Length: 285
Image (cartoon, rainbow, N blue to C red; front, side, top):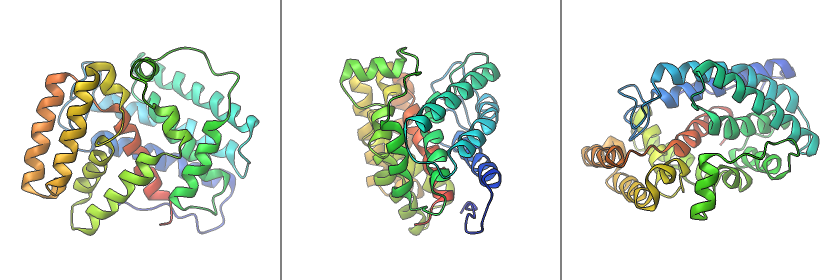
């Protein structure tokens, strides 16, 4: 089991920010390295991506450490208000620009900056309150506030949300990250309790998200049929007992073949898995 972040001792704002930034960065790296993940970059391959690699994902994650540090530092013991929302937005956009410079313009972690940035800020707001649901609700309060300086540009995810009338990353955050709190974290803990290895439990947590998330990365590439295939395939793996069983492993290979044939990658689910690993390491259950 991964080492958790000790916040029990009294920390200065700088000390807490440093620990949160390191934990967030490591969660992104661990998600990237985790294998096997259908359609995603992992330690075996680039999945359905032509422009990504594990090395690029790791470099991208490390380029964001300073962003997470500043988000935590500026959110330290602050209320969720317009001023904080605008500061979180400004720092997130600066982090995205730094990431894009590191990757040569390849979008590696844009969605993760949003989800992870909100959760890092939420922990720093009240570091004495570390129940996962409480952290997620504080993040939701920030996400629900308007940011007048947010650029009015449409991403592929935004287009998918509009075209298919589904909730996207913004709605997931504003709802308190239900796919983390209600799906991924319970599955992670349950799989560990049933004797799965840490990597098996983490893949199970990813699959739990994939059973129901309207992943806009999948929708953008493969439309509704591909999304439905992902939901059904992920559910089948978990119903067979998950990654700690032979049947689960075989069904995961079937799901991976289908997603590669559809040229789809559950990037939204991967972002939420990284955020899940972060929450698992900083929160008190």
